[in-house]
Amino acid sequence: MIRSEHLDVYDVRLTTRAPLFIGSGKSYVKKEYVFLSPRVTRSPQSRVLLLDEHRLFRLLVERNRIDQYETFMLGAQTDLYQFLTADCRLTLQEILSLSRCTIDTGDALDASHSLKEIFAFVRDGNDCVYVPGSSLKGAIRTAFLTDAVLREGPEGHTAARLHSKGFEGDYINTLSLKKDRDGVAVNDAVNSMFQGIRLSDSLPVSDEAMMLAGKVDADIHGETHRINLCRECIRPGTELRFKLTLDRSVVDPAITGESLLGAIRRFDRFYESCWLKHFTLPRNAADVSYQDALLLGGGAGYPTKTLTYPYLGESAALDEVISVLSQIRAFQKHRHDRDREIGISPRTMKYAQYRGKLYPYGLCEVSIS
Image (cartoon, rainbow, N blue to C red; front, side):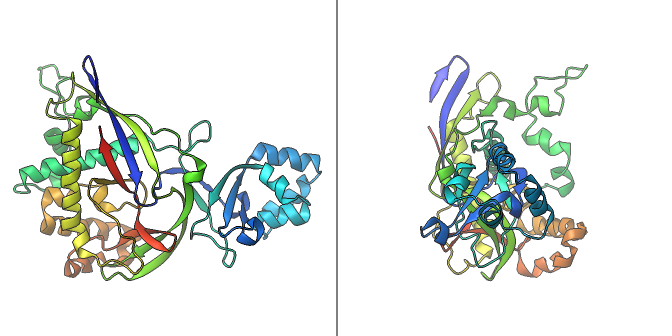
């Protein structure tokens, strides 16, 4: 930790224990990437090429293949590799020269099945993968607030309070930076204690650390159901580096790097005792530890994004979640009213498959120093 005047600056390191997905909102449809099978690459692993559009169109113009490309994009054919080799007469080396990045397909795509739309990871203006500081801050916020409400206990807590500005006033908007005309602190984001907790974006992540992962839902008995979904993910074992800055002129002196780690550890224990205990591990589940860990990004699951269970207590929270999910039209067919018998809601765990093993999405080891 480095202290400079009123600022304490910490190094934060996340090491992915599972595939991590932070979506950009963009996707690549089947006709926008080149799938290279092991037969083509002459390697054990298939790859996906994401092409540089400017280089591709320059080449199509030079080869007088724009009309053929338009026919391909509007037609039923979906194999871009087949189009480039058969219709445009490109060699593999020429196709590789059009690539802006190459990604390991993992277990998500293979030559024997139809290709899928790929949901893209967030990238910066230089087309480099990174993890936004806001994603990590959101996970730390959940852990911090889980710790705070567990210390207080669920007595007297109501769902109405949880979903109101009153909750934010109790735990988050505790500063006095902004006051009304009577000198009373205003309950809004300007007075959020998280104003004094800043997290940088991660350092850029190499494309070599990227992989494709599908999504597998597992029920409480460990029975799995594969979802037709493909995500661009950071592979397990990748180190991500951030800077955490605590503004001492704003945050409570009790909040330090070590106290945040303590909150994360208490969140981990609660997550295991309240959530994981209900689920049998599916076949081929990876052996992963939830100690000193955060879960972030897409697929991390309901309890990593909300405070319903720690704030209301398990029984009342179960009733509240069932009530909310049962009112959402898209979820009504799932019959969440039956979750009371099961004892947990939602009743699925989200997994990503990597090298034949199932990993809980977004699990990362965290250190703050």
